[in-house]
Image (cartoon, rainbow, N blue to C red; front, side, top):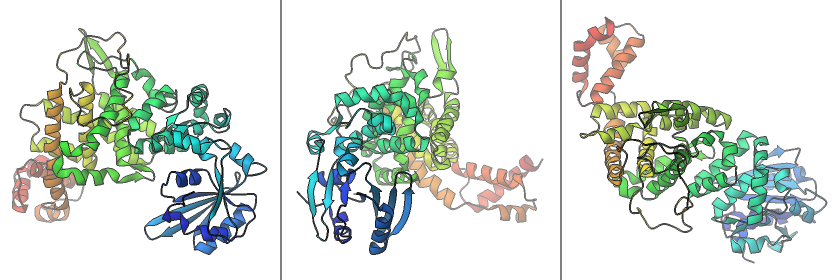
Length: 512
């Protein structure tokens, strides 16, 4: 067999030097070696004394050691080597021997082991009692036994995540078991659910796996808010029901990002770097954008109003932001992630409204938009393009579809609206989506040129206002500075002298 990647091979002699009768690489480590993937997280199983073995290993490699799960007998060693961080998890056998340990794992591709030869530099033969190697070759995720999901319901979500990691298919019987056990996912902690969900969102073609989660009855368990979205009509100018529109928005968001140079060529690299920024550990801005795409219209079911056969959703963006705040808190997400998701939701209609104006947004309107959204305005803009595309899809693809084909396309009956009501004819056409993209380009250009420069270099500060105009410290100073920034953003003020004259001419407005 081929050796593991260079990232892990350097530590094999250290593990073998422990001269234990039985020590095994297990689970994902073996899978990743066989797939020739970089090996940074290493799982190790031993018959007993996991704590002492992990402690000795940590000392030998000058790593940090801690008990991760005493009840399940798991210890972790962390080794930082330059910019890389390696993680070694040591666990006692879950059963009498390595074979019983493997039988208690989740999927066949994770139920393999390789013995680390005592005192040697190499690895022994692969123990593969459930034909995991064949399933890797066939690109199949197969559960070892039906009660694996009863033992830990999170495994259902993990199965979909593994499929998304490797572009594998989930075996038919495994699919049936997941559907039968889906309600038990409610018993899993929010933190564990959140972590697996965002690992799926981080992968390419996340929209495909969101649809799988829905087909497996898992998505509604995690996000019960989607229940009211299914089959809900939005008017004749929408091609899809609300839930399908939301899935399509997530799909188009991924397509927009993949083809970002077609939309925003001057700022492609800046935007890609921006989307890689982590809001919290394991959750980056790109994942949050996809999550927002799925949830951007959660406010519609409770705000729907029908008058004269026309449908409206007044302030659905505001209501949706409140709903999504509750979702974030239920999933134990950080305040930063919550802020990003809610800002996207609360402002997602603004670029679409800008696109409806013949003259486009004014500089004052652009300033106010970014004042309210900050750098999250970039995600709002990207979402608005995807939203417009999902309302009335482009007649031609942006790029050739990548196999396998999207589950949202060509699926007969998908997205049919129950009792669709007549609406206006003012909906988005392909030309409208292109108009949104044109406005998006103007907005992004303003952000990276004028807005960011102005935020870095204010024309005047509060201390000088107090001194020059003999004002008292207090809220009025903040109001004046806010108005100065807005006037500057609108192009009315160019320099400090302009700002001073502006305050002098309008002072009565603020202190009357």
